[in-house]
Image (cartoon, rainbow, N blue to C red; front, side):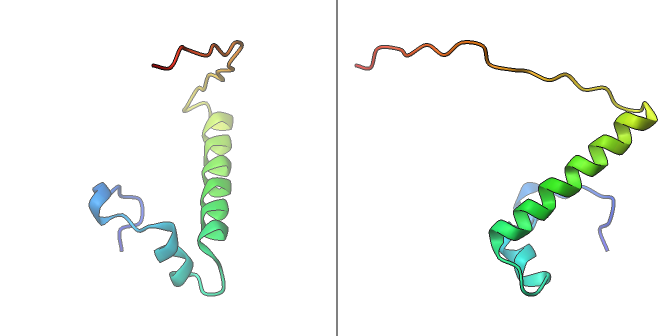
Amino acid sequence: MTCGRVSPLYTQSTFEDLAVDFEGTTASGAERFYRRTLDKLRLKLLESGLVHTVTLKQTECRKRNKK
């Protein structure tokens, strides 16, 4: 079990692999579940005061000349 450990990128499961592990879900469903879980974890860390976050918002978008 590698719970609580971060493994190298080449050994990490893809969302397709996670979908197979959790039967009946698609890759997009596994990705949504993963993102929701990260959001919940982030919220708990914020509430406990262990982590602080900053929200960045884009205010302007400039198009550059394409050559």
